[in-house]
Amino acid sequence: MQNLKNIKKTTLSKQWATLERVDYDYQFKTGEWKSVSRECYNRGDGAAILLYSPEKGTVLLTKQFRMPIYQNNKEEGMSIEVCAGAIDNNDHPLETILRETEEEVGYKITNAKQVLTAYTSPGALTEKMYLFVAEYKNAMKINEGGGLDSENEEIEVMELPFSKAIEMMNKAEIIDAKTIMLLQYAQINNLIIPVKVGI
Ligand SMILES: Nc1nc2c(ncn2[C@@H]2O[C@H](COP(=O)(O)OP(=O)(O)O[C@H]3O[C@H](CO)[C@@H](O)[C@H](O)[C@@H]3O)[C@@H](O)[C@H]2O)c(=O)[nH]1
Ligand SMILES: [Mg+2]
Image (spheres, protein in one colour):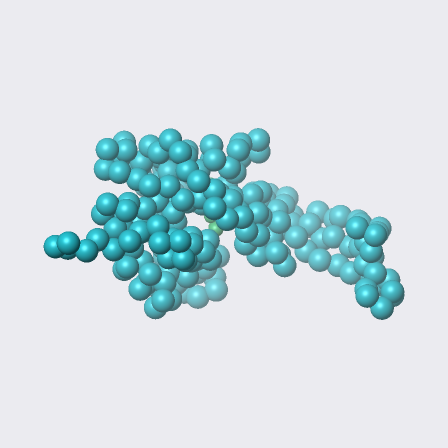
């Protein structure tokens, strides 16, 4: 970029993830150069997946306690989300999401389709998320899911009619951005057509 120079990074915190302050000079459209400072939180990239069953008309979601949400609103700490996980250093997003599907919801899927890519909060986070969809079937269930005890995860698996998930999204009971993106993707693309009884 021609309108960006003198980038200087200062690490403000380096623990679980890294918080950096980035100072830089940016040339605005008027031609004027200005010094700008932005804090960037880096916890890597992520992958998420909407697991759906066209036969049953259902989706598999998770429910877990999220401290950052609780910090914002004490009433909303238990978050309903699609299965998701952080991408380990050199993993491919697909490998990550197949592993997370086993750990969090207990299904062994072998394939998934990447449908969207999204920066989840570009004013603050470096995180890019790879969003997938995949069909699941009862025969693919290999364990109860729930996440890893060793990582202090406690994840409730929820199997819901797709229509119920959409209703929960519309009533702001589902308020996680990646989950909303994927539910709306499924809606727009008619992934789950309601079963018509008696036809
Ligand atoms: N000690 C410690 N552990 C942490 C911290 N933050 C996360 N962890 C641990 O790191 C693991 C993260 O679990 P994942 O399933 O890999 O990620 P996630 O929390 O579900 O995050 C997913 O969704 C996020 C929200 O949309 C995404 O930000 C993220 O990229 C990912 O896709 C969990 O075991 C959690 O205990 C922290 O600050 N300290
Ligand atoms: Mg997770």
